[in-house]
Length: 75
Image 1 (cartoon, rainbow, N blue to C red):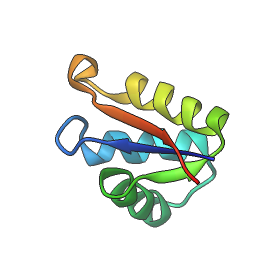
Image 2: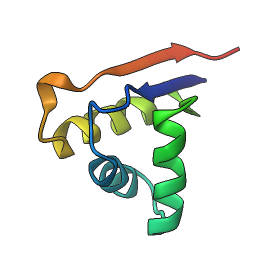
Image 3: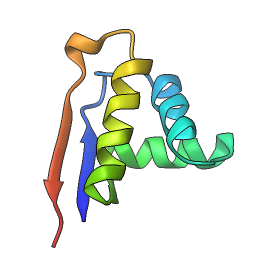
């Protein structure tokens, strides 16, 4: 499994929520909860899932140059 994390301040919460909702079928409340995890400890999924979320975050972010994504393998 892979964990993806976003540096706080590199993307606004609304953009993260929009990207997460595009990647998964989530309610606004679910996407907010997942966005909070994304800015904190990160979210876990397959490498492909995390690559899709990363691509969508870049597409939905107005500040693509400043977007700080951290991906790592989980145990």
